[in-house]
Image (cartoon, rainbow, N blue to C red; front, side, top):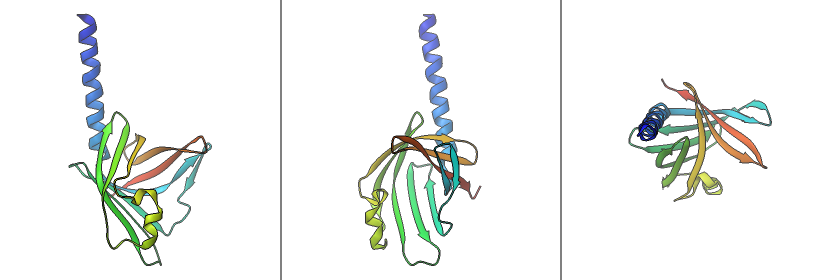
Length: 144
């Protein structure tokens, strides 16, 4: 019986932590750089304005454009969390997207991504793999 109580308590704590992570993830996030091979790098292209928006209804938006260039890329989709893994699925592509957008895998209809996330109050890191090494895509909270 003691084991069942401990297991149930652990499940409740885990569920609460996931709910907190989901609440904390909501909002607007701007690309700020990356972490690779032990070093933090700033956004390599300051003209790139890339934002993610995670809404309370589990819809998401990814949008980017470059200063002094025509065109943009935009997609919408759904998001969910399984533990600390963020799952996103593309459900809509803006028909006015620049023709180059289709070359990016994030701009493919039906595309599903799964990334472990680390979240602090103002920084969201998406964990990826680059050449067999961890690559963190770093976003900072904006507008709050």
